[in-house]
Amino acid sequence: MLQIIGLLTATAVTLPWVTTIILYIINKVLYNNNKRALHFSVAYSTIFYIISVLMMLHQLFNRNFSGLIIIMLLSGLMFTIIIQWKRTDNIIFKKACRLFWRASFLFFFLCHFVLALIGLIITVINS
Image 1 (cartoon, rainbow, N blue to C red):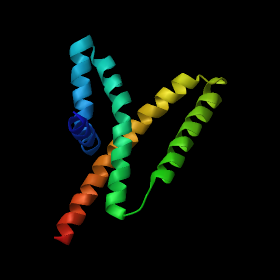
Image 2: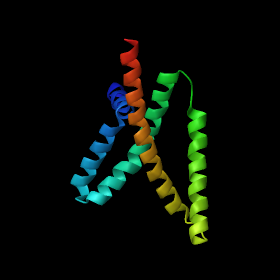
Image 3: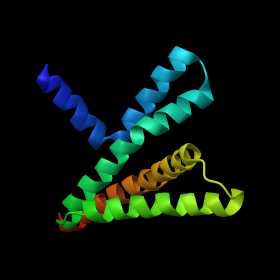
Image 4: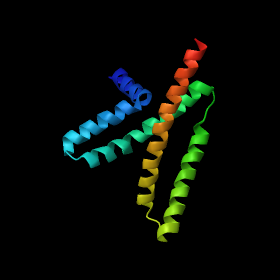
């Protein structure tokens, strides 16, 4: 049982887009709502993209980038809150966090595929 959980976690981190698709399909079947399924799958697979990008950066450059990622995430949240404060004069923290988390998904989704492409190019060049 522990091996199955480990295998599923490793697959979710290694291939986060598969996790996103599976979460979307499950939620679509349960609630029959495309928008809700999309938002659910984005919200719950973002962490897998973040971890995947961290692992890929470590594998490609042989350095630990977790501190940099944490600082970048906190700066992004701060930027989102400041923008919301400037636009509406009040801060709705839940709305700011939701917007930040969705933007993080887009950023790490793109980073995941760019790093995969870079890794592929480096592997082909070194072979």
